Structures are given as C-alpha cells and as structure tokens.
Image (tube, rainbow, N blue to C red; front, top):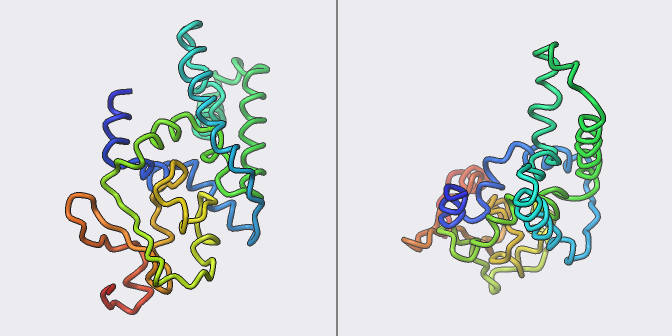
Length: 212
C-alpha cells in the first residue's frame, strides 16, 4: 500500500493510463464503436465505495482480499490461463470461478459501449491513484484561447471525460491522448520544470516540428 501511495503521489493516475493491461484491453474494445454511452457523473464515485467496502472494511473483518477476488483483471490474467497451463488446477474450479469469469465478460462487453467502465466506476486501485491527481508531477494544461470547441479531445479521451473542464479531476488517467489536439489547445508539462513534455504522437502528427 505504501508503494502504491508513493507512486500515485508522484504520477497520479498515470499508472492507469500507461501501465494497466486491463485498461489497454478496454481501450482496444472501445475502438469497436465510434460512439459511446456516457454514464451519469455520479457513477465515477462508485469506485470509492468499492475501495472502502471491498478494499478496506471487508478485508479488515474477514482477512480476505475481496477486491482481488472480484477484480476482472485477475480473472483475465490468472483465472483463464492458469487452468489452461496447469491441468491440476481444473479440479479446483467451482462456482466462484464462474462468477469471476462472468464479471470479466460483463466488463468486456460493457467496454464496447462505455469508455473504460471498470476504471471509471469500479477500480479500487484507480480510486487510490485518483486522490493524488491534483498533486501529480504530470500537468495537463488547457488553453481556452486556442480551443475551437471542436470536441476532438472529448471524443479522443479514453476516460470518457471532457478535457476542457476536468483535466485536474479524479477521472483523468494522464494518457495524454488529448494533448494530440490539432489546435494545440492542450499541453503536457512537468510540475518541476513547467516545460512542455512531448506527447506520444505530437511530433509525428506535425511532421517532426516542435510544438509552439
């Protein structure tokens, strides 16, 4: 837990945007459809209920890591491949395994229609990371004068937020997709230097020229 807090204090939810394999899977599934349903804003607070209930209270009372038991990423990485690789584990498969696989399938299907549904509303780790978003070394800045309100950034955001209004909020995963804005209305900087940080595709998109 101390390591998680230390990393999130430095990078906020950048771990979600850059290193989470289940986040990547949700992003890929989200590309199947061009238009996605945007859940009500209050659903973004459900992950804090999951953190408190399944991540803190239930484990404290039962000494069982309940969030890990329900986490679809665990089902994807271990619940499917472990029984395939180790046949002796198949004897241990029971109702709990089918429940985990069912949760995984539900989020896989939901990811086609909603941008990152698990990250948005149910991930306890994302809830911890998000508490430090405002103190992260990564700063994503919005230039209102350069913005044309074309909604390009809104459509590009894998977290399903409006980067024009919620860049410092708890939902941003610091993936820097919005920094590819064709009108240079969004820039990434480091809190220590305040110098722009090159986004992943900015230079390629502009033929190798520097951002103003």
